Length: 182
Image (cartoon, rainbow, N blue to C red; front, side, top):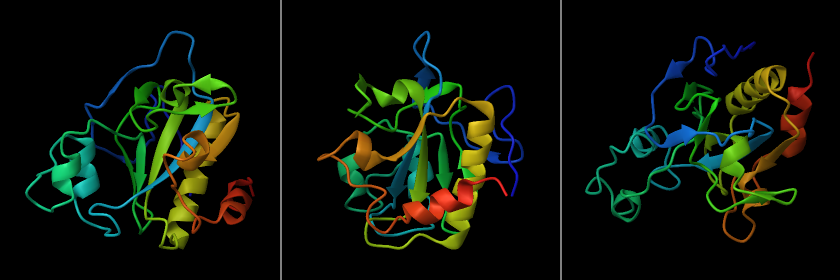
């Protein structure tokens, strides 16, 4: 799979669902970091509309008991990769998505300012799918072709003690092997 990011920061040919949970990056902040996350809504469940509804502020707090605890959150990521490898974009790569929260990397705080957030549909307890690794690797290659990416980390790396994702079931060596250009 070969992906390309256009001049507007959107991946060509990928479904785009605009999230209002974003804003402009601060002056002088370009994309340098990719942050890999994992999400399931409700937790541990995959394939439903929960993540899209959360990122577009349409989550029904009555649809599941857990939703009542998060319905007021205003969060997003640039991308979601479904279990079947479907890639959905929510925020232009040139804008700041609200995915990392309180975070730091290499002595810099506020990772949202200079990062791309990629959510994998998954959890700490569930292995990720082949199609997800392939889509993430293709997306990574496209990001590296367009931006000066200096690092690729998990959410747990930039928010230790606060976040655990993508978790112990994410196979970093496998992912890194797939990102090498054939």
